[in-house]
Image (cartoon, rainbow, N blue to C red; front, side, top):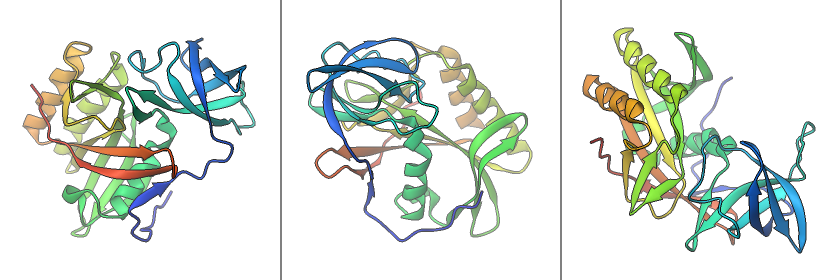
Length: 245
């Protein structure tokens, strides 16, 4: 799949119809929950692999839209949660599209001059989000990880142990020896984030692997994006400093 540069845009528009506010009631399983909208109870799809315990609490205000998938088992699609007055995007299906917008709009200072050569790039038995190419011809394997958990200004990843995340980090280390640049990009969708940090308390093994990878040359970047619910647009919130220990 080829991704071409688009025109520079200062925001990423969510072209959603039928968006409504509701209240979160309970989570049924990893991908389904119950919400109340306009006095009625509906099932809603959750497209985020995290636990989201700090966000999905009984009575939390949520944003939902109709679920258009032909294979849907739910009536609505939950994509944002209000946490302490801040709207947090919890739709991981958008992460790669948002990254493409950020890259094409040259909003990521460290990746100026890079373009997307291929999406869903397979390397060493793992699938990565993107293969990038620099203007000098170099190849970079990049994985996007979404982050929704913020505590005291720290964006923390992961919010649950991630075997897949550890495997990605180890493969990125291997890719360095095969002549690639290796990049892990944390997309933080909580507007209160000020610093990114691996979540040592939740997944020490992932955190150790990330620290090791950084020391060996894997590039670790984090940025924040902010959802404006009035305009249904996502805006650039800036790069976040990284604190790995």
